[in-house]
Image 1 (cartoon, rainbow, N blue to C red):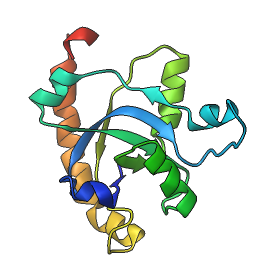
Image 2: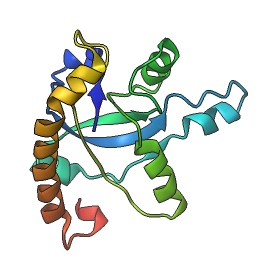
Image 3: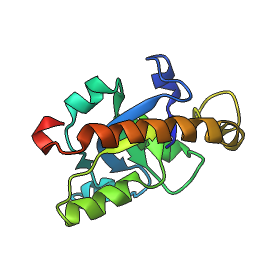
Image 4: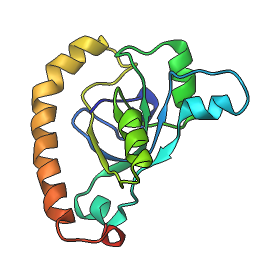
Length: 155
């Protein structure tokens, strides 16, 4: 659950929007050595779920994960390089473990704040957290109902 980048606000991203993440990567594991740099990014794909996306009217975007609520200029450059739409603090780690265990994964994320928007990030996050979490809870229930009994290829 987190933040779209301001450049995506122009594409229609707003507080409370719900996304399926198609790809997940880190934006703050900087290892400036060839090959190791790719390891640092740790790009993983989420389970393709076009039917779920269409049925529940979810937006789709790339997810970028970092360890901080704020965003440094280096983080922003990495996020842009990864072509990410949404940012969180846990997704890439969860994707890494799922990949190691060969478990398909679906990320449903809700927008609580606009990282480089006009309001301070922490203030906007706290202001929207309860309402956005309630919307996310409702949507995740719909996701579970949709995927129940289906094969991955049906998602």
